[in-house]
Length: 453
Image (cartoon, rainbow, N blue to C red; front, side, top):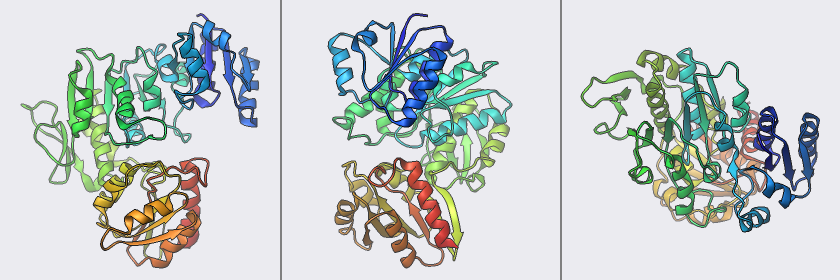
């Protein structure tokens, strides 16, 4: 294999470099960062034979490489990418690089929300059927590896299952899943994209290499159907709100599949037996069940697998109970659409914690569903003042401000009544106070357990 250049030495860059070296390719790795974790990764790669440069990018070396792999953390307007673009240099994302070495069919999952839960649930259902699975990609949080790490699996799995982000899909060329899943679409990442159309345009790369043999599992949303457009392949739709013209749905609170409109229904299990909180997680369960059914898993195994599913960290995760209160960590809800899904999916009375780093999204979709089950919103952090100003106009909703997450927890606890949920579903990223949503969720869980005790 000819030379590979890797830009960015995070987890995906590290995995891509190791894959290149394993394939016998000379690897040049560069990163502007020089911090201790990056230096440690660089030292390990040097021992394996990579040429690692920290603090700079050598444009000549990068442009001379046969393959250039770019970290999703490097935005399109970064100076190094502008310079490469001016030289006519092309690059690919780490999953695009990895799938070129895959030796089994691929399931790829994307969407604005629900993609991690759906990805890991698909893998769980396939494993329940006794199949060997390679699962990874954009999952993050230590829950699964980068796509490039899956190439080393021996023997090869029966299926690869990847979560892919819009950033990763943007830089694909040959990426062609056998089964592609698009959970839903909503505005997000508008701090990186010029507008929502640009964001959705990168999501549409999922369908770029479709063939008549492709199979698509799509959420029941006009925007999703429009994005898939007229691409080749067979479409299968899941829905929690209707039963006609869809292949996975709820009928009398039972999860049901019906792949053939002329065939019999395949009831799986009652919704109450799915141990995941919220109606949006029922949608994720339907998407995963439909995908695994297309991969050959029987309805009986799907039912057993769904019943044994467990909440993922930071995604509608119960973290404490006490004093008649339930504390729920949905720190992964880093956009307005995710928080709307959370609050419209619960039947309990809710004190909602909102805030963090403001992405500048419109709050109208959230205001439209409040108060609903939410009787009080505690707005905190950098986004707190804007959130509070808008939500004070919502009739019947108590709005409180707090300086930070700890203050928000204290304000919610002071107002809680027996039977309430205290729900962290922030509708914002975490960077004003925490390094990532996982750190925010862990701190919330600590504060919740202290309060519950």
